[in-house]
Image (cartoon, rainbow over all chains, first blue to last red; front, side, top):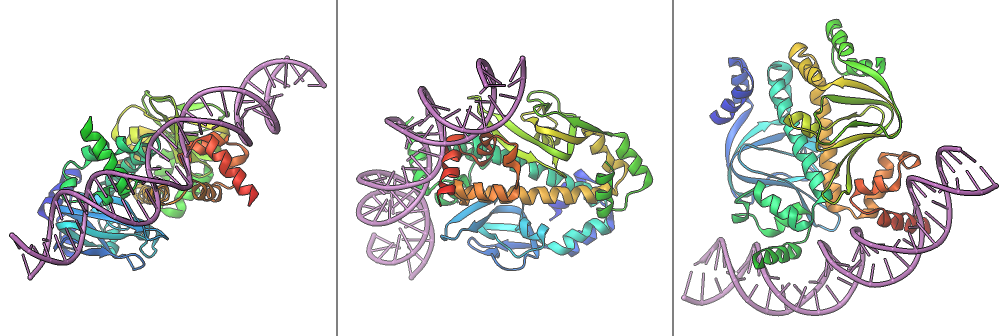
Length: 191
Length: 191
DNA sequence: TAGCTTTCTTACCATAGGGTAATTTTTATC
DNA sequence: GATAAAAATTACCCTATGGTAAGAAAGCTA
């Protein structure tokens, strides 16, 4: 928690009141592997900031197949932002894939922070800008790279995620099946 | 221009000074089909707001193949946001695909508007939030839909883009070849 | 209208990746 | 360590999409 506040302070000047407000709308939580923090179909009133461990968000298609939108490791925010920003019910599920520590925010009150403490706007804008950049890059990679290339890039971005994430989650992030990923991994070793 | 300012005013309270500033950092431009507004490898110092017509942004891969990141129609913003937000050279090209009218902003000065007129922050935040949502949806669609499904969705989102966009641009947005798109179109008529 | 250019379609074959299912390996639990 | 559960690999065949290339259609330009 302290860490996050320091991070914010590096980006903007945070008044004491604003800092107090942040503490009042959040709480630190220990999450066990497998816990579901946001469930598809339900109201989304929480946003999480990961301080250790890893969460993922995914949707489930009509055939029951899961598609991973995001892995959130240390210092990332995760929630169902489609639902929050559109004020809709969750289409995503957010679950913990290893024991994690998060700071849980009340989404509504986190939104209100901008009206109450406009100093926070610049911080949030930077966050959103970074988010847009990473999504643009992901889309471009999906369009132009082969599955093995995407997998190698993924490993660079999440260096030790393989230690605790099943391959089928990685596959569902890359847009391939776990069997294909398995072949890719084997081909890689052969070389 | 007037239209954009009204749009902004619907979202936030815009002071006279801020409005004047907006006018001072922008100008309306008529763009001919085929004009390149941002070129890969160069410095990006402009952001465009489309008032009519259509632009697209794309990257070119190592084989010279183009991949469309975005089509921007009326009321959309377009630029190379990866370059702007990361302060890097352009990796994208932005070109007009039909005669268009745009409002051209100095990107640096548009960024500075937030420090000068903090009232603008909330407007920009909403823009970025919407942008994130549309990118999340695009990624999820790419992961879970077949090419024909993505094509149908695309036609709903850009109802008459086919009138002026060559198919291979659409294909390059959907992540397939123009030949595949051609087959999909034919199959669709048969049904 | 003729001729040129761009775009679209079609055909052929190649290939990456998918689906199902069986088997092996790893991990967790008692 | 034995057993069960979860995950990963492998095999088999299949299908969607890609690549090349040729031809047809449409759109420009003179």
